[in-house]
Length: 484
Image (cartoon, rainbow, N blue to C red; front, side):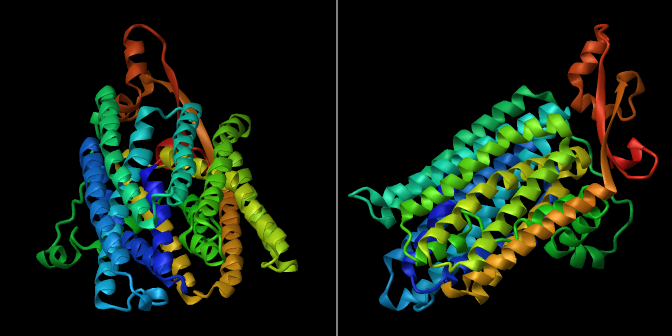
């Protein structure tokens, strides 16, 4: 919950410092996402290579350290606020120094947070179970927790400045402290899960590169080079059967029409929405998103993971298109239609979050264990790139009166994602194959994922399970080939 409050309060503080421009929150988001686009792939291989508990330890400690640093510079930035900064946050040398330091430390904090997300969501969860129904339920429960924190976080952050003895500075300092303290119970819980599940302590080894590299290659294109790592990760990514699913998901991030988008939040703030109103809007989006954690598992049980995901992403695109039509025929400044537009955005959230659960599960089922970190890092890089492009658009169209162009671009990109996922459904089909452990084709992989079933078989209990895999439509099924 601390992350949600911190992400919510930073653009509020920046727009409070420079209320006559959307440039500071847009530039902040640009720097954070650009650093993730460039650097996240370098961490992906480490997720695949290192012990799972070590990864979450480094991720937790990194977040705790850099959120402390970013909170310090945000405090200094507001403490030394001058009238010249009302339309230019770089008006003085102090404000420029504090702003740059804030952007850098917040970027590293976000990077470590996303490493944690990839490790737990893409690597830990599939090791607990690969049964489709159980995996859907587990992913839905995790998303429920995320959404509940997204509901409570902004509400608390928006309500703090309303306390008579509080101001905005005390509010964000309180949030920073709560965020810092929350990391340690999180690490303790993950450690207990790691200790309880033997499968998490076993890891499929990376495929070693047998090509002997020259000294020149190691100097210029070695693992230290983030751009070389990004290219290598991308070449591995395009081989995956779920690559088009990830690209479709990334297009959903090419939007400012989100209750927690910093540009949208700053825009609403600029047209005199109060902090508690923005918190309520963001919380409402998350609360409606919780519906997806109930509806999506039900839909998967009825029509399967691919069809359910198609329905949910279509709902997201259709809702935003309806909102665009409403605003096209009626002025955006009229209160009724402005509110209706926000209502449509809230109604679209179950579609987005439902498809998000489906995308996660398709990647969990379709990516080999020793490639989950690197493929997850490419996904994060793509979504960061999409978000980065929205911030660039926010910088170009930084005047509030130009927001309508950002709105229409967002609607177009989301519906492009809908079309791409429909194309993927035409190319690939999700299949399962049932067999017993007498026909093991990868013993170590089975030991990790099916320890309980192997124990049952040793005790004389017949143990059968299914393997999920993807195959191209119109081709003969070959699970051993298609699953990797």
